[in-house]
Image (tube, rainbow, N blue to C red; front, side, top):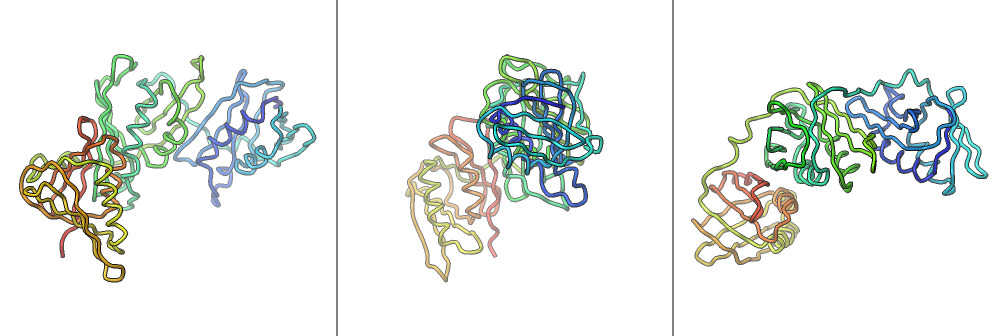
Length: 378
């Protein structure tokens, strides 16, 4: 293998594929990147056996071939080179690098030992606006929480149907659901509803790698794996593919958790509510407990917290309130997470009972709902 490539293009590509590379003592080959030539492209591949990333760079191919070298070491070294053309050449499983006055050799590994990256051919796919998909996923992804006893809630649950994508996550204490409506410009659609659980790590990488890109993302479906593909500018050829195994198991019937009736309905300014919860949280101590009292007669909410070692806090905020007076305690982190994922200036805060699930959702947007459980009083 011998190629000529711009330093900036190689650096940017490596920064993407190295995201899933970590120190793997049992399988050191996973600490590496596979560099390969394909037609007029240089491809970079990495995997941790759960997730794989493959990226293509259009470049000058002098001689075809492939090499496997340590990913993070290569990234660190390339970032220090001058902003010029680089010659990459494979010799005896090593990578020779030339750039202006630099001449270096990095010892590599046998490319045949590198795990195969799955290929997705002739499979069902859906094409959707990338930013819309990534923004929806970003409202959900952090709600999931690792669980050895219940691995199904460790990931993000997707339901693809004819007109909508539902994205759901829960950690048993809160739950979020986002609905993305499929418009006429979306291509492809599953012939029947498709549901799967995507691990949290690749879900985050989709946002990190593709979140700010304009264009369409293709989602390919298979029984045990899923692939997210983003094309190059002005070319149908893929720029990057993110492939992930799916979590086995059945996702809980989360819709049963979402309350349908409420004792108290509140409409409140999001930023003011968020600020006062953050202020009270400084006094909440190790329990993270913040009390919220809804007073319909006074049309206000009282937010308080007390810690014998620090002191106490109380503030009030005006709101539109319908229903009964109610008081409940919450983990402030769960409330702030929900409010930060809502972008509207006002939010709806519905409470069912003192220890029953409550709902936060944006005013004027029915596509997002956040359910949070109060702290049970002792």
